[in-house]
Length: 579
Image (cartoon, rainbow, N blue to C red; front, top):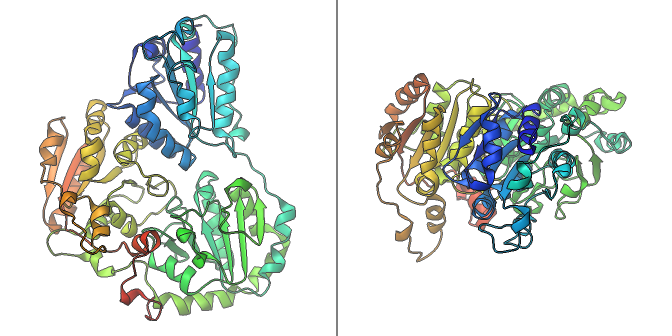
């Protein structure tokens, strides 16, 4: 067996069904090996960066890792932004780069990216958890195993790079079979029960107890234990954007998202009600999830953090108690510990507190925008009509434009793994377009929608050709407000700021889509939204919907306030009875 075939067959044994790539000479043996195996499909992307975005979406939806391949040199430099996004997000990705023959490395070879060339490893060193260079065919097996273990490890989870010279790809492997990574490596289950014991004295007599659930609960598949915990003790749950839907957002104890583009319930509960105890599960409390690193997030009495990696604790928010371990195991402990009577004794008081407080707030800011019927269309109305038409299990990839922010606010998720956005990390333009296709390939049975703006379309809109080429039935929704939305929103707060260059000419995105063989629809009136989404759903093929939207101003208050210090509108100040 050739080394290239060994690697591809190993990926198949790990459950990988798709590889995302842009071809090049130094990948030929790998691509020829993959083409011969029907268990895996090669997906040709238009750009190496989008190949990584595709792999990212595939990994997030499948729960497995994603694989992206490109040539060394320009292939890797094009991949950098996508790899950085995955690194910040802790998405497990295997990046395979073909390199020049070992005998010509460092001798001026074309696209030489060895340590003696432009040095791919140096370029990727800060955005991968591990890198290996195959220098001999006997190292393929141990190095691949080492890479995958690092990629899936709880403290090193994220993208890794395999640099694979073309001559070694074509060499014969020793007669060894591939051994898949252990399931316990993929999902370690442990919790520090000694640290858990220290929690109960802090919970005694506490009524205002709140859980703040982050991405760790998603990775841990902790929904069942989280819902059980909320219901058993009548404890409200707020989430990060990454964990949106980890508890169904129509559940009476779901307070929605806290932080950027978050829900009013969550903001009011944490800032104005000020819980006595806040239990944080699996989030780094960065700018987007930690209320811009302010003290607003801190409870009045006890701050508890549970995380599977102690290095994730923000230096800005030191906990009173830290519990090392898996989020699901931690919740399982809380749900079944003998001392849980401490929380059960305050359950009735907590229920009374919530019943008194909830009517004073609301899930959304500016609720009336959800039914907005004026022209141009408001993104909040887009969210309303999508939610009304699309099935409950629809997966939404929300992109980087201001319209996407607003839809993220108004969109309701009914389960985990139904909402993905890059906004919480570095937020690269074009991620949502490609990642949605990767997600759809990972789960073809459910509808997948990509929400993006025309600024993103200008940057990576051509990637929709991949959906057309492979008939990946994603619904691409362009929130078209004829401007670079987030920049325009900020400009509204800046005196004498000239925003003319932020405007985008009117382009015909329907014709753009049709040029690739994709069905396009133009929406200019609110009443067109529902019928258009119904048509798109029934077609079961790639569709682009160009929605002519207004130059909206709301509800981006949390984004403005916690990012740039702009004042909240007076009606949302603390002295208002509804805030």
